[in-house]
Length: 384
Image 1 (tube, rainbow, N blue to C red):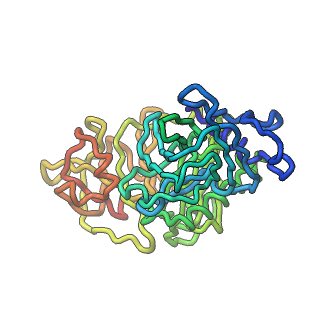
Image 2: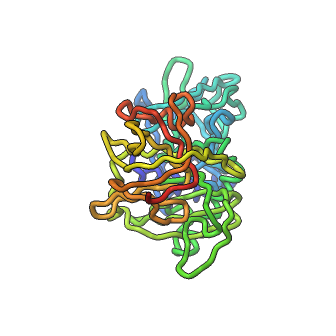
């Protein structure tokens, strides 16, 4: 499903008004023509299994819905705040909740009804007993809700693209992440005079900012050199990407450079593993490695000048990689260029010989063409 379809669905559900008088009249699954269109579900059996599904207007601010892996089940509501009151032509015995990515169903949770019924309120009073897996990849997912009768007739009640964002609660406590996301979205909408739900969230990650600039320093401004945990968020609207950096609770929000999504610098074609952010002071190893920063088979290595060993590098959590012209540049959390591929570099950190000592997310994404040994990069990164 396209992002446009997902945004239209979210906008439609967020603004549809339901009043008592309307509820007493026959309803239609066709959306109000005065608001953004909502996709009308189609029954799998070709019949009109879903008769009506009006949605209250409660103005939820959380968009997308945040879910903590290993803690939360798949949400059974249409969004973070509204209720839907759905009526079916035949009794529904179960509801399937799904998270999808790239069109593929990744996680499913089947919710049996206490007894078959033609009237169902979403979110469900029946809830999954199990949370989603603690090893599920973080990031955005499509959200689908399907209702089924005892004899197998089914209907898609909801499909919202990019409606769920899965967090790692160890690095992104959900309550803090929610505050940061709402604060950044409000700042963006106000600064650009946009509808609150208009922009799509395309990136959301925890970061330890190297100083009080939150990774967006202004020229000739001095910043307190205090490591500050927070988040990096990127929103996209009509081809423009707007990046916002926050402290962890969202009390400070900084707008960074605005770029065109269609003309953004190309992503460097390299595997770029980063360490997981941690709350408080990050403990690092202090050994020193010096050598040439090289690229091979889509991986970045340092060829140790004192041995024949090449180390695959695992970078600090707030480091980024970018291409400018023919150069591949490495930036620290303050936005400073600290290294270039092809040049001699000096790195602090320490050696890890086995993959089992790497962060979980690094292990999951590690390509077969990027073998170790590994160097966990510390705080010192610069030219040799």
